[in-house]
Amino acid sequence: LFPRFSLTGAFGLQSRNTGNLADEGSSFWRIGPTFRWNILNLQRILSNIAAGEAVREGALVQYEKAVLAALQEVENALVSLSREKRRTEVLLQAVDANGLAANLAFKRYQAGLESYLAVIDAQNALLLSQDQLALSRQQNALGLVALYKALGGGWQESGSAADAGE
Image 1 (cartoon, rainbow, N blue to C red):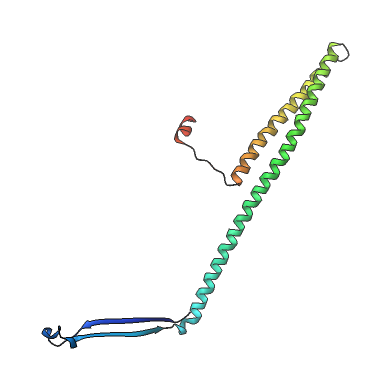
Image 2 (image 1 turned 90 degrees about the horizontal axis):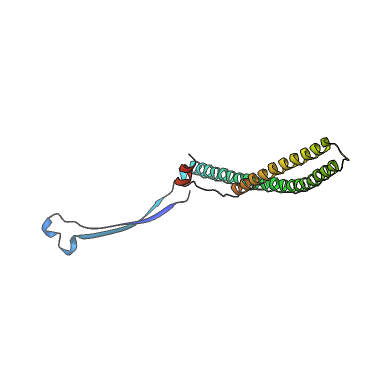
């Protein structure tokens, strides 16, 4: 796009006879400027610059897209983990309540106030809530792994750990 300026020079010896090369008058030197400008190719040069800018803009858009996707992945992992922790807290309370209900049903059965079917129903509710709590804890662990990965965490298997699993 812009003109190029440069200086070139030369130094040497010249003579018609090789015996006169050592004489003072046989040496010469030159220095001169050079100027080069592709003004006739200006449109092509401007098009190349515009194409380079478009490539740069495309790369910037891809980078921003990747950053936004990473942020969304982290946010989704945090929201999922937060919801599952609240669910775990509720299930802990449900397990406690169902445990008390099962104990109460058993005591009422021993006192002759309830049938054994009520004890079985209470124990069934306790086991179901314990099962749900175990699943929720599993989801919490998986959520932590997802968050760790979304934040860029990673690990590499060592040779001994990979061999031990086989």
